[in-house]
Length: 314
Image (cartoon, rainbow, N blue to C red; front, side, top):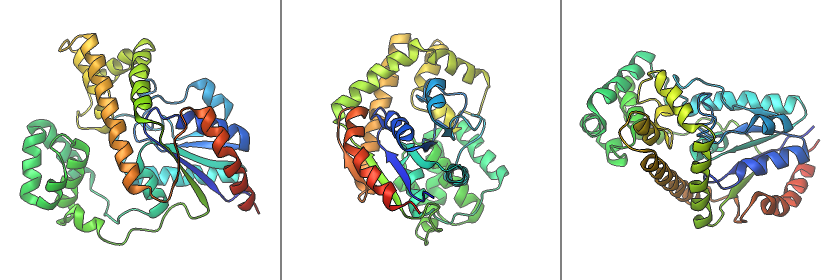
């Protein structure tokens, strides 16, 4: 029985999904999503989810499993990931967890701060308040109740602002205080192999630009238009997905197509930059690879993975 798991992280457009698929075919693996936006079924094109052809080549899990009307928290994803990993192992496959949401992978391997469940009414009220008064005013409200968390967060970061606000509202304690407490046990015990892909930044930024152009050609505007038609709370994570706000602006007639594309490209590059920074500071024990494409990654990594799997097979 195979007990090990392979984890692959990297910034957007780094080639991690292609590598995960190639490895799944080579070792009999199941690809498990660890991207906070690829969980939403309405955003296949704009989040670069695996295509149906990719999904036919190897089992995939946790892609498009939630509606955009729901907010996928770290805790919710951990529950889903725990079940997906167990299912992969039960079928004799190697779990290959891949994604760019570093917090998901950190929680999977290190545990999650023990924050109590937030009542749905408080969650709804916090999102509604943010939608009514906007980011700067909401940030000021948070600062009045929880100055420690407000000092950490930008007014332009609605998801984390709302999270901090709902925690202080529900528990009377700052999220910062909860995060200082010992975390719950990790969901994924050793042995696991963590691989971090870090191609040269200019290459990744260029891929981001080219991929956004391809996404528009493949129907990203129609996808965002359908999302807008659901009339969801604008504070929901799916509504803040990278690229969604500028494309919504174009659909509403606020900016032209070229400006929307340029804004989406800029937002994607900035997101990749933040990912590089997060990975550099948080994933110190992961093995890093800086090849330029998935084929080169595969050739460099496969011998290491083969040896790892040999040592973790009963």
